[in-house]
Amino acid sequence: MTDQAPMKRQGSKVKERLRNRGHFRADQYETHSFMLQLPDELLALIVEMAAIYDENNSSPQERHMAMCDKDAVLALSRVCHRLGRMAQPVLYRDIRAVNVLPPSIRMRKLRRTFRDRPDLRQHCKYSQIEKRVIILARFDKWYDDVEAELQHELLWGLILRIEGNFKNLERLRLLSQSRSLSPILKQFRMQKLKTLEIQNLWMQWHQDHMELEPEKRRTASFTTLRLVKFGERPTALFHLLQWPTVLTRFELDSICNDSFPLAYPTLETWLLVHQNSLKHISIGHLSWGGSQRRFNAAIFPNLEFLRLSRWQIQSPLQFTPEDANILGPSLKTFVWDFSTQGHIHQSWRDFGEAEAAWIWELAACAVSRETALTRIEIQYEPCECPHDATEEMEYPWDRMDTVKDQILKPNGLQLSYNKPPISKERWSELIMAGKCEGGCIMHWEEDVAEAMFYDAAESEHEQSSTDDELKSPAWSYEGEDIRKYMIEMPKARS
Image 1 (spheres, one colour):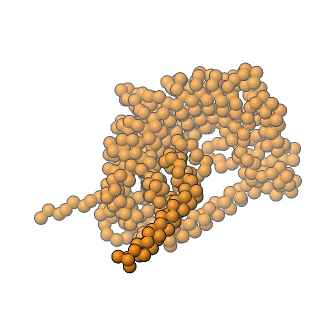
Image 2 (cartoon, one colour; image 1 turned 90 degrees about the vertical axis):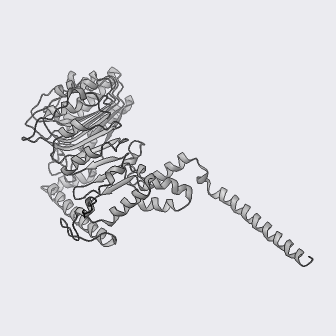
Image 3 (spheres, one colour; image 1 turned 30 degrees about the horizontal axis):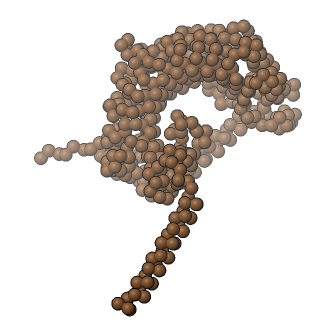
């Protein structure tokens, strides 16, 4: 007994030292790990912001659209169980199948993960599927809360087959590839859809007119309609506007079919069905040769944002009493867009004395009427080579700053514009030296060549660094029958 007493005392001292050391480490942990003391809501937000590539998508509505750094998220998930629990949804939030040729090991692993871990399926909020991708049959049964981006006509039928599983779908972007929307209008029933975006919708002469059945008018749940490169008949746009119950945001990027001119008066009439709910209207360049009447924002009492094309007002440009109708009763932001369909850059002549005077008069009208307007934006992006500029011209951004300093800023209004592609000094040097003739085209060709070289290098890097993908030349497949990877082959009957 006497021999064991010192051992017990020694053991007690060791335990005490260990306990003291543990307390010290706990105190040190609490001091240096303050972030882990934050509530889950703030910690989850920190994880999301640390993972996002695109800092411009900072709003909660758009954050899930941003590309994320999967390596950073994976590293965060391994720090501790708590961070791992918050990082895991981000890993599965954005699933893209781009430039993947079957048989794809990655897609098969993802399918196996979703099969074994059904709880991970709910985290997928965005899915992009491009036309060279063959979808595994099980995936469409597992997505139920996802934004879909489909880029091939063969996938139109897929939308109709899987809509029953997309119970919580909120955003859908369709790259129509010149296909009609009639099947979607007839069978689409996604009850929680908030945003519908349609790109490259073109009229097909051999197809029937796109119509919406009377009983389906004002039944769709989406509140945002975004149309990009719209080439269908104007009646198709009419039916699309009749579809949603309530529309708060309408964006028409441009009209690509001059065979059926569309002007502001007609568009206003169609939008009146959502007269009291519309808060955001963005209209790009419409058909040439239509009515020259200005857009009347005064008939939309709750409209806060309006974007219009400069080119709907033909020369000579002059502010008229009719232009005052742009200033709706609730309008806070007006955007004047100088871009045109099919042109990358605008001319250096596009923003001159007449344009500056028009903005001046619009601001003066807003001030005199004490409207709700607080901000004017000018979307103007000429190329870096002022090949069409002359020594007599004034630097466009000097004109903008003059309007801002003399009329907008003193009256509490803001003026924003694109960053100049070149400084005033460089602009003057190029004009004086006469080195810009044809330079813009040359610059564009160099940009394209550089982009092609970069894409090729990037593609080569991806192929060399991807060990688990089978290497196949583009537009060809190697191995067994690819149908094996598209669907589950039925067992042969004995």
